[in-house]
Length: 393
Image (cartoon, rainbow, N blue to C red; front, side, top):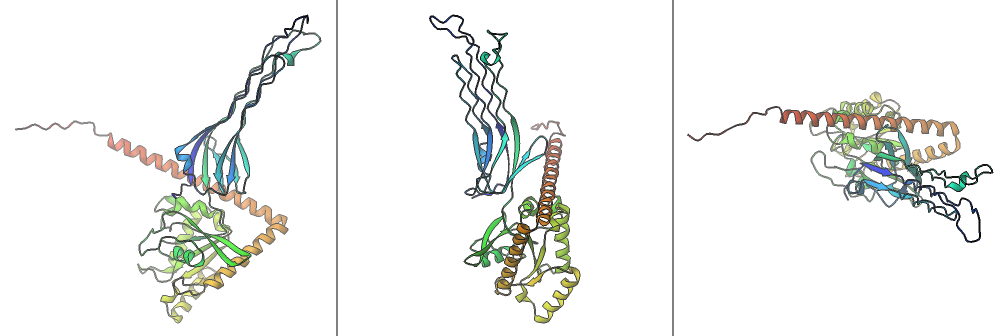
């Protein structure tokens, strides 16, 4: 299935029903008095998190959603029926942003979690509501209020515990294919991975975590070069970032310089995202001698002091069990601390909010840049209005 991780939809809540102007008319009942009923409330629009969905592609074909309006009241003090709510299913991990104000309305990350995005209009009052001891025959009613209308931007961020990042062909897809049941495309050319993929890494019957693989980053990714920047939002929910570094790049570049370049791109995209734990996995170490690996490991220890650094080879099955167990232990410690330490939990929520704000800001910048490039192309195509006439001699 094609992965679509961003979509814009229009939602319209139902209008409230109008109040009714009516007077009681019955045989042998003099001066029956007002009996106009109230209208019904308009239906609201809700987004509902559904674990069975994993893409926003359906919203490309149906971008408009509308709840039912409430019915008007009627005589005999009958209240109009309320409008039915509209419930829209979205994937887990969907962030909802108001297209006009750029405000983050909510974040749907739990199964069956609901978020109201457009409130239905309140009902109008019938003339019975205005009856009093001094006004026994009111002719006043109120109309129903209109429901809210909004344009929303939906951004899907995959729910994963560990996120892989690195240059193209760093071995990310091979790694996730080895440690999980995921079957990503693997080939000997850059940008083999075109869409994010998820894999469940099972350490034991009761111990597992989810790993996410995104397209590789290149220099200038934060400004829109390559494919990775548009998918970096999928790393924003991860607890640990695993930076895959090829120890023997085909272009002969320096692995340490490559690692610094990728992390600089990550910082340009979101400075808050770099505050997540970032581990380094030296990939394809089976291509180095023991002495060469020891020298390179020493350089990485010096360049990235305090980091967790592992030497692995997916094809050579070197270091993978140790790395996966260490990641599982880190995630268990994180969950236990977040559950028991209120200050740590609050700090985590603050960091997640900052990352979401950075992701939204970057998405807006890319949108404006794309619009500017499109306008420039239109101006270039329309710059020359001269007509070429061919004359036969």
